[in-house]
Image 1 (tube, helix red, strand yellow):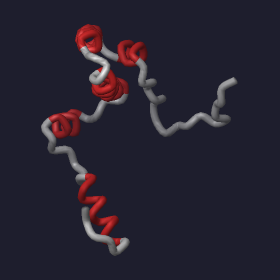
Image 2: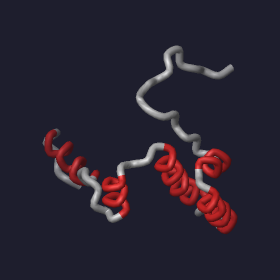
Image 3: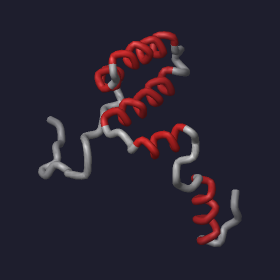
Length: 99
């Protein structure tokens, strides 16, 4: 028996399962072939990384960003703050030294 929420969330689209089949189904046909090729060529240490990278791409197809946000993310100029800065601030707030 599986657990299911009583009230479904209206927060956004349902989450894409992190499985090969779900990722492949969410991709356009041209990308799907590349996904299968990369998965087939990956060894056991690379499989999870390949699946994770393509899962993120498939999630963007399911819920696309606005064009300018997508271009900024691909160029490494997306708004936000580095995690290292947040860690430094959290440690400083607790009175600890930065790593």
